[in-house]
Image (tube, rainbow, N blue to C red; front, side, top):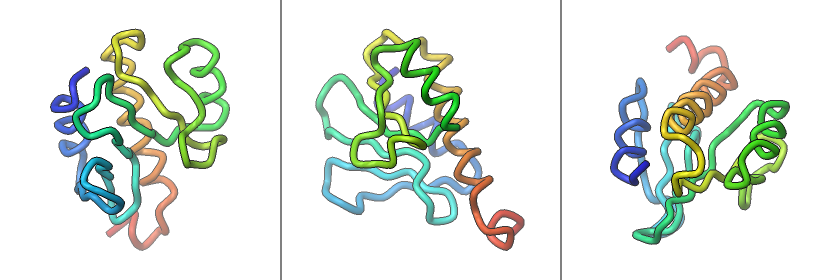
Length: 115
């Protein structure tokens, strides 16, 4: 998974936007103002991104993949930091991005979710 591919997946989701709220190297991907993916590291390799995750699934993923760990600077119960270095299959990474997006959408207030 490349940074370009990750960005393309994130921005292909309905109403997804991106901005740089913290510095020029930390890109936040949002839906209706809520972050669903947080990329940090600028041009550094490998890519690391924080993704929201169902808490039960998060624990299972961390056990199955050494490159999925508790979310850096995030609530460790609900967020994972995922290293995109080839150890987690690209199809699983894409699924994790979409899962994060859907978790955030599901948590939006009803008026925002239905708007």
